[in-house]
Image 1 (cartoon, rainbow, N blue to C red):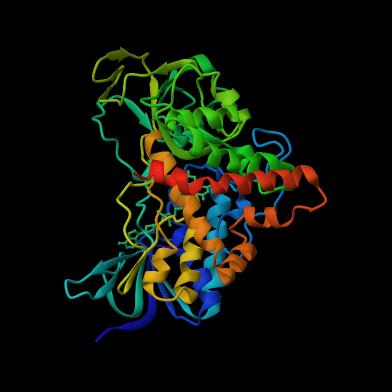
Image 2: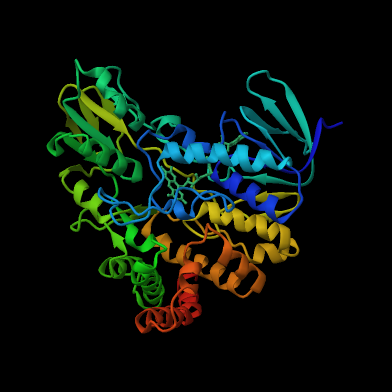
Length: 469
Ligand SMILES: Cc1cc2nc3c(=O)[nH]c(=O)nc-3n(C[C@H](O)[C@H](O)[C@H](O)COP(=O)(O)OP(=O)(O)OC[C@H]3O[C@@H](n4cnc5c(N)ncnc54)[C@H](O)[C@@H]3O)c2cc1C
């Protein structure tokens, strides 16, 4: 006999699980149980480094029913002129409010924090309290919802994949604001390990706090392309960058010779940025950055490109092909956690189960809300899955055109369904549909951008035949 019964058991109270629960509450009368081993809602944001922030606007992050931030335009600083980016603390506080004021207040959600979800071999589900060990068995009437697919890891929950000698001073970005506690022995040199967004954030933080650029070394095994934040602003003033940029992406899918050429065209069009124009990036993870951040980061010129670190000694970095001595009292900053685990896509809707994945990339919250809408209104699972092709997460630049096409093809299918189109138009997690709808037909320049977007979309079937072979 089960201890409790529910319609949906959601594994994971991160952005994805909460965005799904929020829309499911709006669209159905379902009862929901949410379980998470973290002690507070928000998933990995609980573990984030203190100076973390969203890298895309708050305006379209979180859950559909509750705004995040106030659509403020930042004045000054590295995000000058762009929509606000919630800090990690703001994101965590927001998800706590979502849980308290929206989900629990509905009377239809039960939340089990500090609890591990376990599955029996007979298909049963148990919530094991991490504090008491008490087990609650759950009978699920409709579906188990897996909101843990991406297995997000951040520096504070990650262990380096290389040995670290005793005596080496290793820190995570979480430790940097605490350096004042070492005032009697401050680092002589800062060594950033990793080429992703975390390392960029840590570098920006160090530079803004006054670390001299010539005392920072940066281990960058691969260079990365990054999205220019200009192209992520759902504001009329940025229409050309946003929609013209989307048109450019589609045009380049039709005409680029290969993935490198596709990125080159987007760079020429101001959509993509890189740190060093002399180095061809080989990686793309949808990191989003401003030109101001790029200019700041370019002050760091001591870049080590010897591939991944193999070991850290107290006064040396070891690579497969080199051993590089570093000054005594160097601080190694581990930014090598891979934010998401790349796994092969699986069908979203399965018998008795939903596995939440991105059907619009890089929009995990929108994708989860859309999955809940389809669960409520999308017909049978074959019809739902036809609307929900998971976008394969790119790592190498070679993977990107295919991911872009899956994204665009999902978008195309959604636009064919009038009810879904109307839901997306009203959804706060969708920034760009509203922008298109609010263009003044008398504004010839803006209407020309929309016409270009439509023309570019016509080339997609041929592009798909080419890139999806
Ligand atoms: C630094 C950073 C900045 C980002 N900025 C943006 C941005 O600007 N815009 C954007 O759209 N995305 C951004 N992202 C992407 C981000 O990963 C997603 O927005 C989102 O937070 C991921 O949420 P999630 O629910 O998939 O994963 P998580 O936050 O990892 O949540 C999954 C939860 O499942 C729980 N769990 C797993 N297994 C079990 C189990 N067996 N039992 C119980 N609980 C379990 C975990 O404890 C965890 O709390 C950013 C990511 C990072 C790392």
